Image (tube, rainbow, N blue to C red; front, top):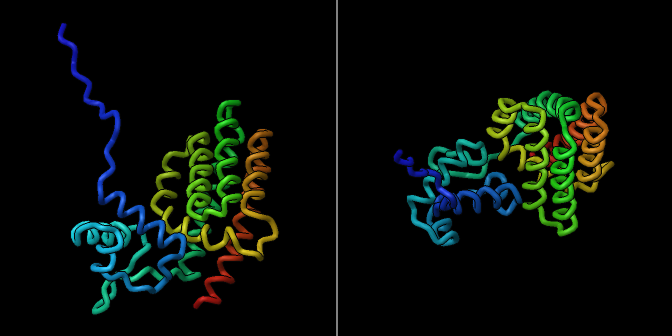
Length: 225
């Protein structure tokens, strides 16, 4: 019997475009490129050390993610994030994350809770290092685990489409001195509710977390505008 050769790629190579895409995405999320800043192709080519075709691909991807806008006669700029847009994102997050946290609390095994705790500690480490990029990435990984354990795969697909803008809002609010509770403490409360298997409490903690975050974002964005 002839054995079928394995077609599995063990180590997926990261392309130059993917590396450049991640660099520019992080620069926008972290605020290195400010809302309304013009993105000049030649400057990006020089900064990233890539060709103009790669930069154009990156711009197309980030436009699809809502991080970049193309203006007539001006070209690509960092998208201006308004409260009207942010409010819709928070409303979607509230519906999906409350439901996911509730079901995660009911479904989570001992191993699931350990994995979620590890993700929580990664947020704590990033916060201690004051690394906004790591902190946003760690927060995203924490929520992804909640959606996975809850078996809310389609809901997570919806969240993923918004993740770049969600990450931008997280970076905006996580370090705000106006927070009553630090982002890490809010997520710790969500984790403890899940650890206790209390779905209603998990739902409530998500509600309190996002209510505070959205109020902060509203103040910041309205002040900027």
